[in-house]
Length: 470
Image 1 (tube, rainbow, N blue to C red):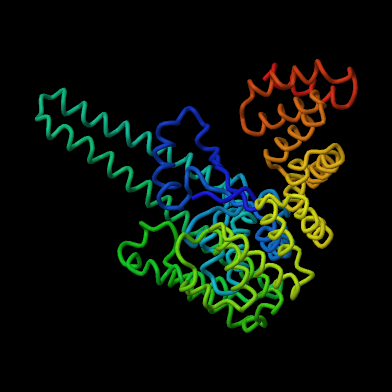
Image 2 (cartoon, one colour):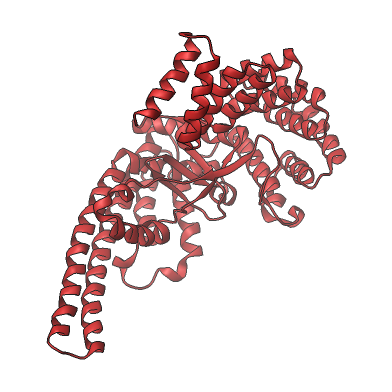
């Protein structure tokens, strides 16, 4: 599925697991990666990261107090929302990841808050570093067992035994070794999950949030995966959800915040976020969707507008958005979306008013500025291009890391015939998209075109030096 060119942008993102870079055990570690990270931890090899100003603003709003309470540094560019239907969240060296399924399938903001607190529990405890060390130790044991299995097979073979017996004896030892290593790994993971649950409860206490949200999410997962609750406990990546639920319920009932509900305004914002995701991501008719039917009228209208927009019913969308903005004149994200509709309806100049209004209401939303810059570049006159480059530099000053911004800057400078600067930002774009050889070519062109010893020339020269001597 693809979304239209808008403030909701999907692009491919490949999480990096540093263990895979240890070349001495590359094959065996890769094998463990497939089993541990691929199957049990629900981490995909390529995630579709969703960028949307409204969705991100909501997640940042509820996340920041939790980060502050946990002592973990709050960094907006390390929180990602990816397109996935499952209820899921995880942390990696790259940051914290939430699935759209989690946001869309929970019933309250408190449930997302609980999941965030749990993931911060992992970060607070340093579980990523500990897990890498633990996997490395498993690899060492696995190598020994693997060699023992080969040794057994060779020994039987040399004695002239039956070939079937040879393969059976060797593989039997290898399988046993794998099972022992899995048992050790899962036991270690169960301890980490329990620790993260405890820290989550402590974070929720500090921020005066109820732990019932986290409990409700665990119950949802437990109900969906009830058939997994039987069998040997060691062969699970997490403690059984029922035991975690009992532990957290005991903690929650003793809390002063057990019955604390989400503020009405926060719940209203949450519904609009769900409405946006439903409108964009639903591939089926939304009119009979249970979530859609549960929305308040404003969220229903917003979801309808987005769904109709996706289906090119722009006239109907404009009528809905005119009414929504009239009744909600201080909601920046309604202006942003309406600007997007007008931009894609070739009413580019008219869209500027709505983007400008959105920026005035939400000045710290970088993705709205990016959309505004796109509209200005589309207009293409000298004044519009100057404003576009100004807006894009403001976005870069907000410490936003997105290759699209660099690409747009290159385009804006090229249309102003500032080719040296266009080459410089093309070089930055190539670096961020991991095309180092191409980046070097563009940096050299920039160095030749930019005035010698100026700030921008020095930047181009720094790129050349960093790439040539790497």
